[in-house]
Length: 420
Image (cartoon, rainbow, N blue to C red; front, side):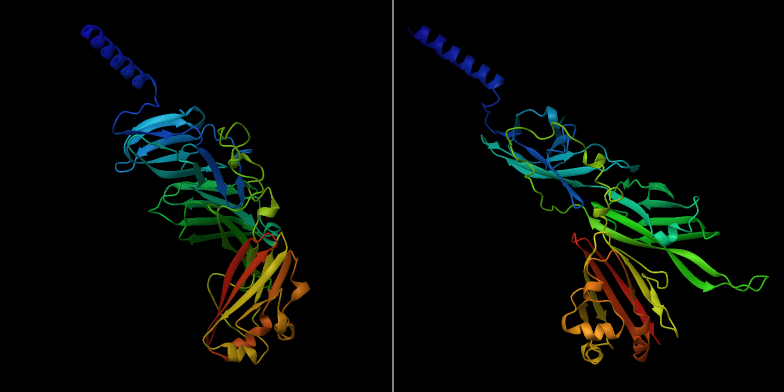
C-alpha cells in the first residue's frame, strides 16, 4: 500500500512539473506574466490622429527592456507577439517603434512610444495602449507667391538638422523631409541659393531649439533691400534677396478624433490600411487645410531690429488658407504704456478681428478691423503711419502678432522697432 502511495505521489509530481513547463499560465515562484493579448497601439500627431482603422501597425516592432539596465529581453513584430510572456519579477518598459529611424530621407516618419510596467510575483500585468508619436523632425519648404513669380528653376534649399542629416529641396520639391533627432545637436540650418529676378541670391539661416516631434515649416519670401549704385546707363535697380521664417507645429499633441483609437481591444489593431507617413493627407502640401497661417514681409526684418527712418514702409503680409479667426496684437514697450496708447484710442492688447470699443481708434490709424479681418485668407497689416508716433518715444518697441485661423492653427511673429 505504501509502495502504491509513493508511486502516486511521484506521478502527481511529474504531472505537475510537466504542466508547469507546458502551460504558461502556471507561473513559477519569483516570476509574473505580461499579457500582450489586448495591448493596443495609438499613432498620434498634431496634424492628424490616425486610428487603427487607417494605420497598419502590424510591422511595428515591439521590444521589452529591463528598466535598470536597458537590456533587451525580447522583441517581435506587433502582428507576431505572443499573448502571454513570463518574466522575472522586476521593473521593465515596452517600446513600440515604426521601424528604424533614418538620418535623413523623404516621406519617412518614424513613430515611437513606450510605457513602463512592473512584474510582480505570481500576477498578470497588462500594458494597455501604447501611444506612438513622431520621434524625428519633419521639415517642409514653402515659397510665397511673390517669390515664386521671380524665382528661377535653379533655386534650391539645403536643410541640415543636427550634424549629419541633410537633404536638398529642389525649387519644385513638395515632399516633406524627415531627419533623425540627436539630443546633443538641436539646430537646423537652411541655405537658399538660386536665381531671383535674374540675380544670383544666397542666404543662410540657423534655427535653434529644434526638437523631436516637430514639423518645421520654412517659408521663403521676397525681400527688397536698398537700391544699388546706378549702372552704366544711369538706371538705379533695387536689389532683391530672400528671407526665411519658420512655423513650428508640435506633432506629439493628441487632438480629438471622431472615433475611438482602440474601439475593440479583443482584436489587435493593424489589420490593414496605410502607414501615416504614406497617407496623402499627412503632408500639409497635399491638404491645404493643414497649413497654419504664414507671416511674411518684403519691407521689414521679421527676426531682427528695424530702425525707424523717415518715410519708412512697415507692412506685414498674412496668408491664412483657412481664413483668419483672430488677429491679436500685443504692444510691448516701456515708453508706449497703457496711458500713452489710450490717448490715441489704443491698448497694449487688442484683437483686430474683435476690436470692441477700440475699433474707432484702430480705424483712425488705418488698421483693418472686424469684417475686414475675419475670414480673410490674405491681409496686409500696414503700420507705416504708426512709425511717426513711435519715433516720438526713443527706445525699443515690439509688436507681437498672433494669427489664429478657422481651424485654430496659429502663427506668431514679433516685430521689433528702434526709435532713436
